[in-house]
Amino acid sequence: MPETYSNMEKSNSKGNTYAEIMRELKAGQFRPVYYLMGDEPYYIDKIADYIAENALKPEERDFNQTIMFGSDVTASQVADAARRYPMMAERQVVIVKEVQNIKQTEALEKYMKQPMASTVLVLCHKNGKIDGRKRDYVKAVQQAGVLFESPKLKERELPSFIENYLKQREVSIDVKSTQLIADSIGADLSRLTSELDKLIISLPENDRRVTPQVVEDQIGVSKDFNGFELRDAIVNRNVFKANQIIKYFDSNPKAGNIYSLLPMVFNYFQNLMIAFYCPQKGSQEALAQWLELKSAWGARDYMTGMKNYSGMKVMQIISKIREIDAKSKGLDNPNTPAGELMKELIFYIFH
Image (cartoon, rainbow, N blue to C red; front, side, top):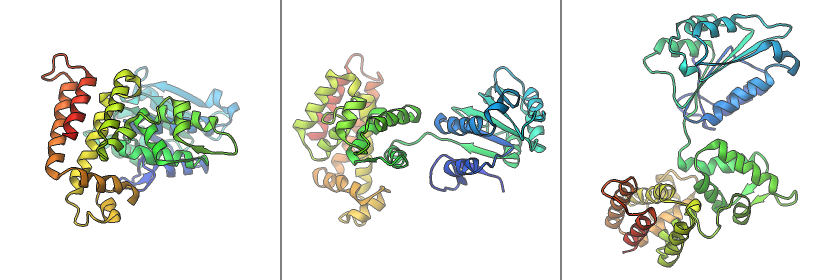
């Protein structure tokens, strides 16, 4: 069976997972071909780097590890390199970065029909994937080894990623701290893991917990004025707190801006609109399942929101968010600054 991998930790319709690829590699099982593609470079780098560092012993790399760039080589040159026999080693490794820059792939397709068992060929294709029209190429990759797609994580998937990353390193984190990190750093997983590593190093041996204070000290995100607190103020119709936070953001643009806040506010009200259609919206568990939330705890904000906002008002707010988003991008807005646009939105939400 062809193997296609997703970067998600759970199995899905595409096949096996990143975790399973890594388990296989750590068990010393290397496939002849790995085609690593997608918009999220983090997982592509993790797999390629692991192979580069572990498929060969350090003393074997000088003669048996080759790194190429797609803009500098042809498919024939890559295929020729892959057909070489290893020197005084069990295998050789050929890594091609930016493989998408190789336009004529016939020679690679031909190689993949009879790949060398002693070669591990790693093809890295970041910020995109194989042209869907190249079906023969895709089929050749699948038959030769592993085709792995690494899509960008969605914003709603970031909290789970953060929690799992820290859990694997025996560090705990509360919900607020998780959301603070997700909101402030976003879906750049390379930067996100770097910041998480910094948090881990800062923790004392006798207290392996990440708290809002730790996040504020190490990442520089205010535990009182942030996207998480703004969302909470909106949910609970705390007009004073919401305006405090918007004023803080206006004075500290690095702490938060309209481009990071709008998606968060939009996602909440979009889900709130869906919540109104839940057959059992009075049940926290049923609502969580309806909204596909990770836990019933997350449904509380939507139950509160349905008490504080009517369905009609939510529809109007969603429309207003779209209008503010367009204005923030310069449409029908010659000179209104971002801070004023956010104040306009907050006023509209509460009135």
